[in-house]
Length: 263
Image 1 (cartoon, rainbow, N blue to C red):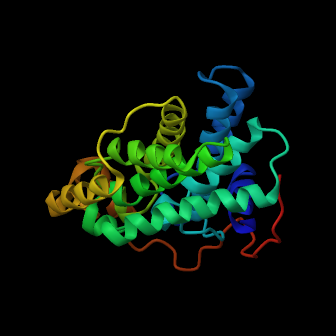
Image 2: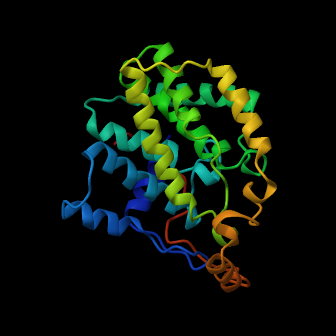
């Protein structure tokens, strides 16, 4: 948990890495928040900022937790540490329990489908992370087991068909947007579950359907770089530019594992 928190905090300070297609975006978000230009409540803005920060720590080669993958590594820490900023007196034990709930959902997905975008598109990565965090948020808000499963269920249903098309073979764009979308989807699905929304299809059937949808995607849309945004003329120019980029780039974040602390 400490590594997740550190990924968020390091990213919020701004990151730099030469072998990278996107400069740090989090600073611009922070500035516009101060100017009150953002829509939505503080909780959503906290989550988007934290997700961005965590994924940018990954892009600068700082330490992260692949939960469930590096490509979706902004979702779990960003959602977790973003959401708790709007809550009071959240203990470390409660955060650990929430991560345990997320992990159990992940185990169900791993057993019945996949986390690999090469097999199931980005719904296998960001979609799975969204389902995991939907359940975790419900747990943090005192919801029942059924409500937690409903949140995971709805988040997965909302993610069907998400393609994986990273530009320049870098897990940066459109991955950053998909991580933030997955986090907001987790929040929405948690609220829907807490409000008693019906998911209709049982969770195990949703996972089975997710697996079939992923396998039905053309290979061009499964993290191969041959389809989607990755195949656009601009993306190809970026890819050419990145060819032969530096092999001795140094991250701006210290590659040191932090002690576990709770904000």
